[in-house]
Length: 143
Image (cartoon, rainbow, N blue to C red; front, side):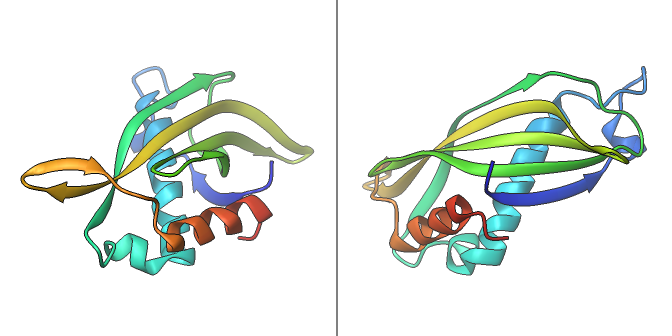
């Protein structure tokens, strides 16, 4: 998968009573990858769009394939699943770094919509050009 990479080392705060990474952290890492990608490639997106457009997470999911534990090194790779006029889907792969390579431990995705406040309500808005450029960068595999 080409895409943006977010690297994380599992800490005690990421684990549950059994010593495994708590499931909610995978979704948190999706958000972190998205934020860091925006910081690196589209600072105007991270700071808020100048025309009042905001990102709204519509749905997110994660499928767990293997367990992660304390001090595992994880690479979360974010890519583009689909890009519409007002919504997009970002895909995620979670890879455990091992001495002999990498092991896929989970997959996931997020659907986000661009919205704008209008008369006290949120209404769909076109994905700004800066966000499209960001997703082009992710799709091209630049980091």
